Image 1: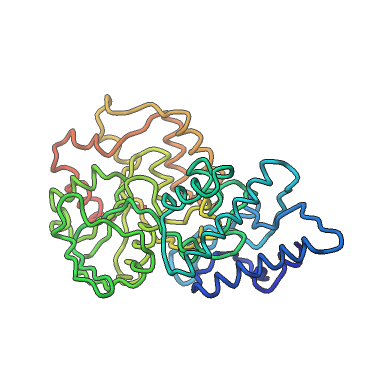
Image 2 (image 1 turned 120 degrees about the vertical axis):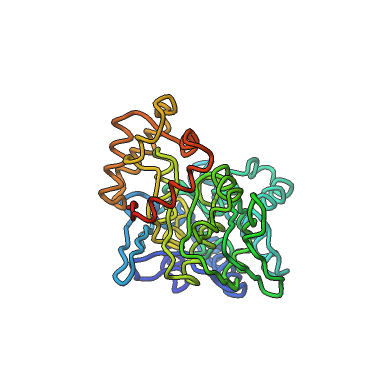
Length: 388
């Protein structure tokens, strides 16, 4: 397995380790090489498979990349391998799951098909019920979140989309924007209603979008309810903007589209509107720096997002009865963020204030001042450059 680990297909001396976006032929070649190396080990005079080489996901292998010519910083995994023992029953099952998923990926690539992770789960549940009993097992096998887990993305060093696995998107956008997918009609995103235009999970379509806009800002909103309020009020006409939401923690498709917008419209600043709590800050940081839970795809699609609100300086606008005590989960997230080297000092100060106050505030509490107050709040902060 050491040869496999250091083969030209799977090893590089570059500091940055990442999952490549590859054509189907290249992915099939990588899977075939993996199978051949595995079989070669099995037929050797003394066959022994005691460990599987994987990219190390532990905190000591995480790095922060600061852009030299841009304001964009991102987190990534450096090129360090670890070995996961296969001598335990659970580890052996995880090893088999990798091959089961790759078997289906080969079929998808041959037939030029795409599936969502949910569709893949039902396929595996029927074909391999002894190994797959939950969606979580499928998700971790595709791209694990544990420090030394078995997963196909780390094994083959290619993106999920390259494997024929589409992202399930929850995101939506609205505003002064025209979108056109290849061979499709133009979509006017200002006429999509309060629910907005649904973001497709087809990453290839997102990368090939034709984008036109006269907006001056991009506003990323944490919550769908706030997104709908801004859409109903048609804030994007008062503040010439594009409004986008992932309806919570960012999915890959929403992050891809935001990144695509920044490339097509590089002069537009991006502002984030999130709750004043550790989860809100974590959501902002995922858009801004990337997500280490995405492993080899962590560094991709990071955008220079500014924190518009809510922040500590806005707390005087919140009625006292609207504050909510922090929950244990909030404190766990805060501790994780505090331990991250990516967190800039003014963000760290905001997080410290949250923890010391023991309270959280939601964007909806601004409705105390009237349902039209939110638009005025956003406009005022943009005009006064009140963001970090």
